Image (tube, rainbow, N blue to C red; front, side, top):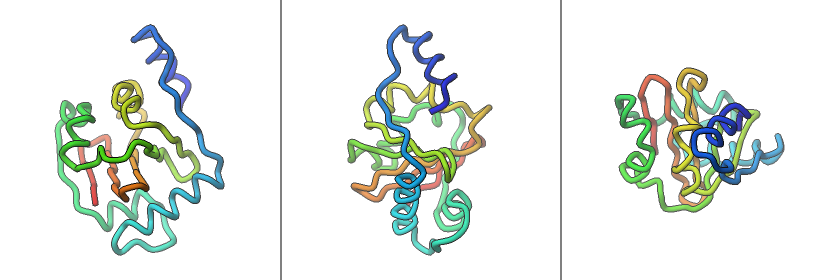
Length: 139
């Protein structure tokens, strides 16, 4: 998680940023390998973001919907698992529980800085890739 997002959340809400874990490169690689196994047509190579974009269907939404992450979770039946992974890029993966993530989403998602983000729950195999231009890819 980028430090400026944590600081912005703590300033805006006057409380500590919710607990999360930054995974080591090895742990992150393991999550990404597991994720690839849940994407029909995915290979073991290539950028995970491009892999999702090439193999999953997407819907377009306006900014208001993208910022309503609880709505997107319910729409895509994503809210079943408690622990989820946030994949910023192939080298940076965070783990966070669902409800604190939902509460912190407006501080976490910054489309002016984040081109794309992958949310993944291995317990259910559900994937959401959210882009700065409003596309949401899902399995």
